[in-house]
Length: 433
Ligand SMILES: Cc1cc2nc3c(=O)[nH]c(=O)nc-3n(C[C@H](O)[C@H](O)[C@H](O)COP(=O)(O)OP(=O)(O)OC[C@H]3O[C@@H](n4cnc5c(N)ncnc54)[C@H](O)[C@@H]3O)c2cc1C
Image (cartoon, rainbow, N blue to C red; front, side):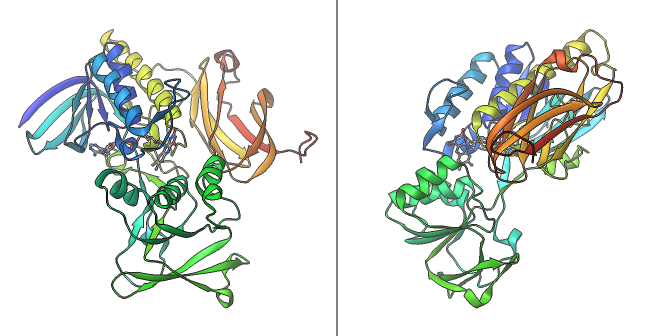
């Protein structure tokens, strides 16, 4: 067994882990970034299209280019990458240290003692089993991300004619990618009355390729002998598939693009409290979970649409790790005592993060709407006083809303009062509905 020690252990070398690792190392922390894969970059490595990095690197990059730049930043800052290394467990044996149990084929088991841990394990895709789609257990059924990896990294075409269930971004990007490779994408079905993916992906990946999107439509079955031969779909009537209008669509491949779930096994096992809507950790405005010294960022915290926001959130997590370790080094309590305010979503918000904030802190809110609106008003209030308002255009569940509340706004809030973040629908003339 090997033993290592560090100030900051980052789990996952995707965009979140690499940017957090770079920032922590630059801030003077001895830092390890650990990933089970042989190359750093996470999901970015299979996203060979461009559209990444405009905010963070101020240039248009492909996924692998973004990954390469982030890995270079981490290594140049002095973070050590431990690749092909799986984090199996996080133990809290001592008050101010966590022990990570690592396994790699090369080194066997290593115990890594860390003052702080940043969870950056990303997320995984929901699949047919999560939806309980009936039919035959045949070849030709993939999650959109698995098909993307197969095609972009292994050079293998998943099939010749495809139906995509769910209009999440990965499915939309795969509709375009498959079309480029000569695969006939017959249609994309979406159970909701609105698309699940970004508007730009609907335009660039479906409309430009004349691929129909059937909204309010369910995939009711997958059929075939050895391989998929056809699927059945039906429009929804009063929330249920109307089987009297069921249609058969022949195809040899079905891709599922029906949402992502944070990789939360490690989080759960080390008693990190999970958020009932995001399924990621409950975190405060410092990206710290309920376990002092364990921080979270990126898709493991909540699913992001844009990698740039993942990197920015990762930097915030690392900044607070640095503060935590600095206080420990000075012999102070690592988490300053002082009033905190619960942050609660209201109106048409599905969720808002962070779940709490402290006095005089700048707070970067991330949230998602529960409905589609052409106009909406975002309001942040505390104890009946409005702290900030912003008019928004075209809010939809698919697009994350970000808003930063300056530190002076949280400077003198009534003790123990909740910070209420509300999304209100608005008429075209700007009045609340
Ligand atoms: C198909 C697709 C298309 C996208 N398109 C765009 C786009 O056009 N523009 C844009 O800005 N964004 C896009 N995104 C979003 C963006 O790429 C992601 O949000 C971001 O890359 C996620 O980074 P992450 O570090 O949180 O997670 P990941 O990249 O998933 O990284 C997590 C890492 O953790 C590792 N890991 C997990 N558990 C363990 C463990 N126990 N031990 C060791 N390692 C572990 C994994 O191996 C992985 O490498 C896209 C995403 C996808 C999936």
